[in-house]
Length: 158
Image 1 (cartoon, rainbow, N blue to C red):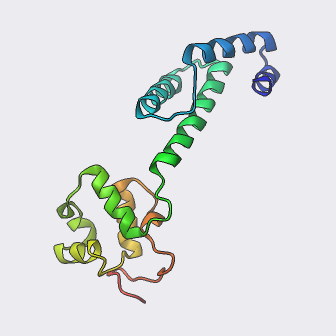
Image 2: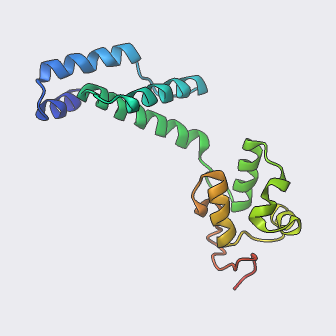
Image 3: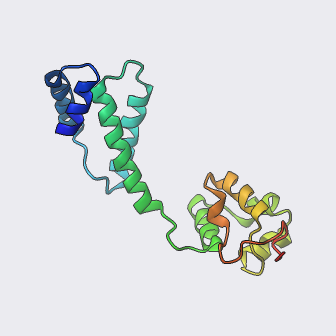
């Protein structure tokens, strides 16, 4: 905590006041490494409340930064796609959202292309990857196979 307090004190507040405020916040919130969905939700709610606060103190800003690190760590461990292929990533994202193939017909352009992609008979083109990224709110790179980067808009090699 000393580094945090020293940084905050350099920005204008006395070290003792900032240390006291930060210690109180840490005691009240009692941040821990996030390991459950309930802890994740609690941290997200605290971050939301701190973000909405107009006159946030230096101590509250430091708590906000700490919570952001804890949340990011949890989400990377829990939601990382790891070494999944683009098709595996798509299938997992669909499963997690309870999506049916019919909901992707517009993305792929037709029922047939959707079926071919989901059955691994056709690759995901860069254009399709961009659309999927928008649908799932993830980077398009999740759906691009780096071993097969040169696909045209229909999924055929160029």
